[in-house]
Image 1 (cartoon, rainbow, N blue to C red):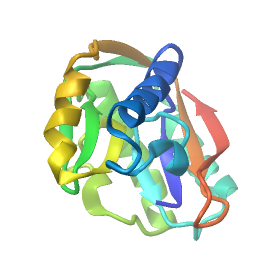
Image 2: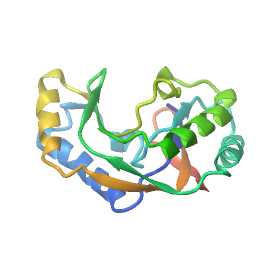
Image 3: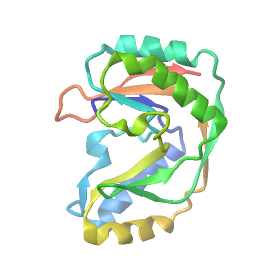
Image 4: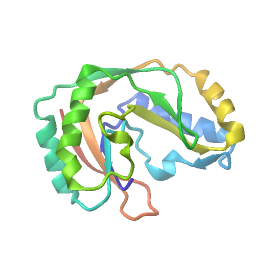
Length: 182
């Protein structure tokens, strides 16, 4: 995913997720986690949509600005742990009406600007989440989930902006390119 569109987490959740990433690596070893989130996108976030890098960031930002102009800040809740295919571990985010409307409007605005690398961010398939670990080894997945269940993950997260991050090169981590306030 070269371009990621969605709210970056605010403090204290931003730092809490960064600490969780470190704790998972410390507990299970970097070899058990196929891809370190810090190496992919160092900004803990809720992905609303992902695009290839065909469109200029300014074009994407303009589309997002138009999409969010009628949205006000709101709060979402989290709790539990989920696992996507490929042993990707995540924190579920509750699907509030405000979040679903914002997601729909953002997707409608940016969908024509490029190709989404996976279909999972389309409104009918979207599971809002915060990523914890990617490509966990099969023999470690249950232990990683159990480990994370030892943390208090019942959070209230204010959503007051949408960020755009992009990889400057395929090998690099994402960089923050734009933030659009709600």
